[in-house]
Image (cartoon, rainbow, N blue to C red):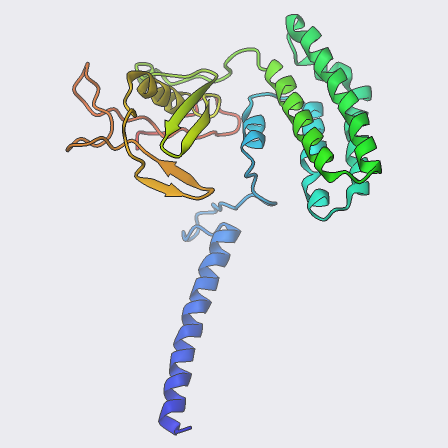
Length: 278
C-alpha cells in the first residue's frame, strides 16, 4: 500500500470518528437531559424504561384516575409481556398472585373510587377478572400460550372498563380564551373507511379536549371526506387534513379564518393544560 493512500484512509477514518464522537456526545446530552444552557440549573430527562406502544395500554394510562390498586392490577397483566416473549410461562403465576392479592385484599379500595350507582357493574367486573385468573392458571399448567394471550387481552379489557367506571366527571379546566373552540370532554369512536379497509379510531378528549373536539367537529362537518393521506409510515403515523386549493387546513365558514388549536400539554399538579397557540 502506498503511503499517500494510507494517509488518505487515515484522515478519512479520523474525520468519520470525529463525526461519530460528536454524534455520541449529542446523543448523550439528549439522553441525560442537557439543554445546552449555561448556568440555568434546568435539565430535561427522558423517562426511564421502555416506551408504551400498545394503543389500549396508552388509553388505560390516559384515564384521569387516582387509584393505586387498580394501577397495580393493570401492571400485573401488562408486565406479562416479557415472560410471554421468552416463553417463561410458569413465571406468570407470580403476576397472577399479585393480581389476586389486589382483588382480595384491596377490593374496598378499588370500589372507593367508583360512584355508588356503578358499583354493581364494578363488582361484576372484579368477579370476572378473578374467574379469568383461575382460567389462566389452568392454561399456564398446560403451557397453552395462545390461550394465555387471549385471556390476558380479555382481562386487560375488563380492567380498562373498571378504570373507566372510576371517571366521575371531566376533571380539567379549559382556559376561557379557548372556550369558543369545539371540545370533547371524554372519548369518542370514529370509523374511517379507506381504500385499504376500515380503521376505527378512539379520540381521547381526556388527554387533549380541544384537539380531540376539533377533530370530531371536522369529522361531523365532512371535512375529511374524499381527502388523500399525505403521509403514511408503518406502525407510526397516518397524516391527513390538507384540502385541495391554496388553503391549508380548515377555514371556519362562520369567521372566514383559519382555525388553529392550542398545543395541549399535561403538567402535573396543574388544572390548566393548554399552552400558547402553535
